[in-house]
Image (cartoon, rainbow, N blue to C red):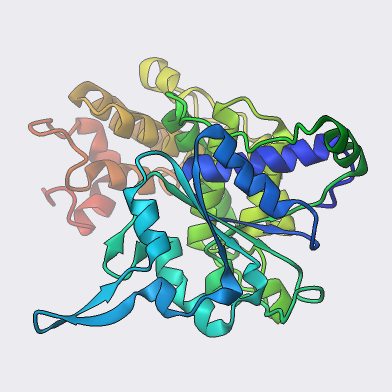
Length: 373
């Protein structure tokens, strides 16, 4: 995204805040001196602890831990910056500055911290977020392209400093801070909706689940993988839950899976006018004139609703809804959801199998989910 005015700048800032709030690693790409470091360190003014690491000053052992012999066993001692993050009582940011100067060996060493929040034998608390900043390889000091495994750990945001923001803040001294906040109470409902939309999209476009670019430069930015799709749904749900602008969700999804795939997915999501799954459970739904792909998505939303609040009555009604869909629209789009409802741990204990399951009898018996009789 080429930031050219204050509104676009604030969209990027909101996207950064969403990543930090959800503890999803984010990487800011921008030219030297464009305020990346300053905006991340502005979190100090909000009461956050920020550990800034100029990445080229560190060795792989600063991320994997330094091997030490203790009581006849090898342990991996964490570096001081990780200990400070662990011991801080409030929210923290581990800020990897100049990340494009990280050698391949250093990038590999950072994989486990970015994914599991573990440095050596030290486990970081759930109050720590990872943020990195990088210059494009063509302007970075001794820059390296990011390897695909490293790139897929981050949400990628293009950063710039528009002239109107710079001039105003230079005079006033009031620079925008990262907009961080708590997880909204209804976040899970929004997350379920976005995950349902993703399952429908990927069911129709299976090739988009994993699409690693062929050229090195593109592999160092955003592309779709199961991990980055998970990031995308979590961030889109958060943006929706806090009432952020549509552009914020769009930028976040682009930063996870890339521009072209994000456009295709968001266009698909916008075109889906899904009924309220709670209404479907109570009042039913007419599947007779509904396309198979939409039947699949509606039933997935019912599955998510039952998972949030699982009672024998709701589970039975969900199975009955799947049976109606199978009769009215065909069995194929209903089979994945009814299978999920019958998996171990999903059916409430003691709940009998509804007679309407008979429409799925041969398929479910073959899968060992119901008795062949």
